[in-house]
Image 1 (cartoon, helix red, strand yellow):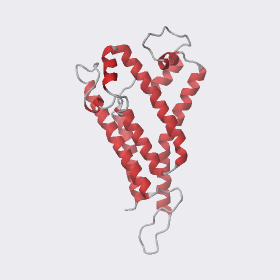
Image 2 (cartoon, helix red, strand yellow):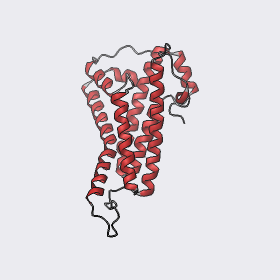
Image 3 (tube, one colour):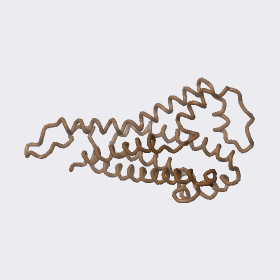
Image 4 (cartoon, one colour):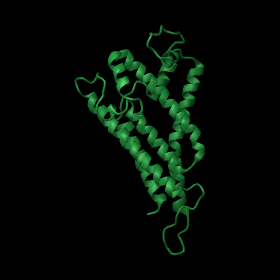
Length: 230
């Protein structure tokens, strides 16, 4: 089996797991894309009194304006397109493999287009993507189990959450980075950077909410565990 077919198979498996993760076994989040868009549309542009411990991100996000809504929608669009690009690239690679002629010796054709995966780069990228997906799935499973416990409102600090405060995001970062590296398309570095900043914004909002609810407990957790594991 050529590296091109390995690339197609692994990417399709990763995206299939995303469908199951988001639609079948979703993990509720108050800073999800839908929640952020709803917040921008419903909140009034009046600045509430900020608590002494509130970060600039939370106080700025509270004052919703048409400009902030536009920026939010634009960021969501860039992130969505960034995540869809590897899938579209995979579709093109599959089309190229299926439509090229069989080699002279009768063996299956190999993708020869300039846009097809580069073997060494593709293999490394796929390994990173799969590793990231494993981290995200492990964190999601742990979150779902925790939600059904009597102490579900307590901060989760065991398992992968003992290594990083945001293992789901770490896994997503590794997965999208690995997928884009596997495609070998350097021009995707810019939208990838936007994706990183977007998730950084969401994690700050999430931590602000947790600080409001638990204060001392979560502040202690912040001091003991790094945000992204490094």
